[in-house]
Length: 500
Ligand SMILES: *Cc1c(COP(=O)(O)O)cnc(C)c1O
Image (tube, rainbow, N blue to C red):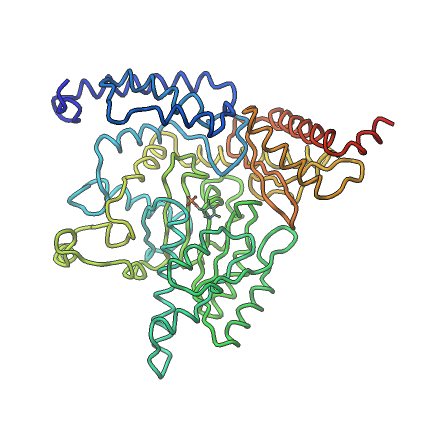
């Protein structure tokens, strides 16, 4: 085959069709045949297979490359569609979105400028307007698709930083330099907020002590009284609260900060409120739980991760702002790309609102999803996993082998195995760590882990409506089995006591 026959164009449409069909058939067979979410392979076992591939010796055909891909990737991949994948915030994906993904790759629009996307630009804008409306923002709202929640948070905080700098300058008689202002800026976020907030603060040139951790209540939600106290302290110390970050669906607990109370405090102080709804955004389509997000419409900016609770393939995320004027802080003009003349011509260039330049048409996946199945169907899927988490919580609280941290607001459960006998705390920690690792190595199920109040816990993140309560019960038995096995060998006194 000539090298040009690999280019996708008018003459290779048939090659494209055959190649993709072959790939789709492999993946379809894989999905249909996955008995476990994972094979349990280790990096040391898989590495030689990947290392042995000679990248300078092409195989020539899609078939051979797919055969090889079976060994280097497909056979041992972690399959999120499997009902016993219960670990991180990864969802099974809906088919209309996967179809959208195939179109995205083949047409390959770049959403930075109208002259690289045309209709793609308008589709993205419609979806931003649609999301803003679901949030409850007014007509001045806008936003942009991003690569993920981390980037959405970064962009939101960038806008907040620029607004804060502008206000500090406006209200000051001296003219402070940017470094002088930056060192005084503070971001307040709950102790359960996502670590991308801290990363963003560093990237934005704030000091190492810029992010202040606000304590949570028993339900792992930010305490408004503690927030008020921290805001007052910042002012007393001559610092400036650049933004308050409320999390609507914390990564560990799915807890939702009290948005109305937080919004009140921000409003009184004139502080930028960012709501990180990377996880909780699924509620925007929920038929039964939308009120859990009440108050989100009072935010200045909101992060939504469609690739978490809208069942979209990675990546699909957006940052929305209540006032589109604030997006000017990321507007730069390049003569070669988006000259100021294009603004005068009224050309919609999305790069004017983004921190990326070349940018995928991720919005198409959501578009196809809404056009084929609709928002209510998405909301029903999300409601189902939240229902399942509530059922699983009852199962766990009735099971004396386990203790659960909090009743879930969304779809995560943080719990730990606790032996009935009094066992040294560090040994219980080890037993839980071992159970997670042993389960992962078996590939039968995948669960996550986290540390709560200094103790190792296990975590289920339920995002698959196909996960039944029976699946959850079976995984709990596996966990208890591995934990007991560990204690059996590492706490012989305990097992002796039991046997006696
Ligand atoms: C996952 C998550 C993020 C980060 O999103 P990515 O898409 O992984 O970059 C931010 N905030 C919260 C609350 C999250 O759960």
